Length: 563
Image (cartoon, rainbow, N blue to C red):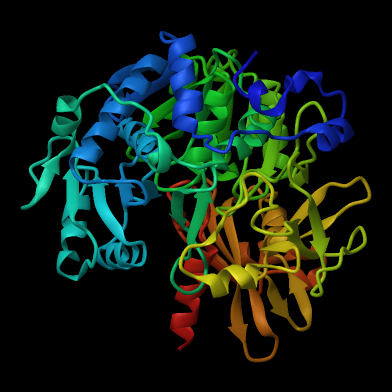
């Protein structure tokens, strides 16, 4: 019996159809379920020497970590945190990029019952001040790379709750920094699961993440100890991880996407994870790593697939690869077809948010991929496309993606607890038995969902509602366009005009003639009202660490120039 079977009662291959898995998939767990004890420690007991993680540094250093070693260092981390005064319910911020220490810390904090708070290493002083004070951060563990500790120290006089700070990589930081690795190595590896009130409950808060919202300060998304089980849908049914295989999701640990693809669902499927701690994305390096370590399952944003396909993929031996997935933005048909032609593999798309686990996807072998389609509802969730009143709309009609969730006590496993310390925001997004994602889509006659855009990404021009992807997908078909982000810019007559910010392919240069050619291309390929009246050529699009295009940054820049 594979680990995940304990929680759904059967093997994924025992399901016979999409309807079967939707009707009969149910997650069961004990009231004190804790992933670190009930999954990691159990794997360490039953298969101690099996590979848990293959870690590679930016310089090519390798570290093969077994399940037994991962469990041992989680115990050491728990003891070290406890020695510093970290207790159940305390908030600890982790800014560790892709260091293997992140996994030791996560599992150690789970064992204590402390709340892990992920953060990206590119944060500035003001970012840290907001996050630490809003999140009542008691301790921060920060990478010695770059200027991360200096940025953190910049806000030190304004922190209200931070008591402890530790740095990794033995960096000599400013005053007050503890050497995390020295403390970890010196800590005892003997740890016992707490009893009574000190033991965790499945309903306790386990992690908190700052959402990457488009307006206002980031909200604090809280998940409880059942959250890892929500990733059975992610790792087992979408990623299709293989027992004894090696899964590679490209994601930084500053974002919840790393928990989607580098920990919970993969270990529940008894697969190891590959962690490549690169400094900057390089497609050749990624291909070389996939070839050398015989990656079996792979997930990355479409943007990264696009960059990989700019290289000579056929030169690399990717014969170990069995299954591929993409998320973060819609996948173009052209990209899908090129990858399939070179590898013989489909790319299976998926959708979810910081507030959820994977909740919509194409799931092999139950649903066939349709490029740019999000797929269908994932088992464990009940999704509808709703109008403004929360009523389900007919096929072909655009509405908001909503998840049925009658109450906090009766919600899908994987859906957030709420926005921490922000009841108003929670009620705004979760009311009348529905969680409102803020994303829009339509459902076709076969039940596939097609993404349209964020409510705040929709461009309203001369009475038309235009989704950015509708225009982006057309422009990407033109050979001159390597990458594109479509946004709305203020227009006195139309309200907003469509703007395309474009990175050109090799051997193309900006010109008025090319602008006209691209505009005519869009007019001929889709409804003329969608064509970009404004085109801007740049060298690189703004992106998150995970490679997702940040349209909000382009919009904000345009709005500031108008002012």
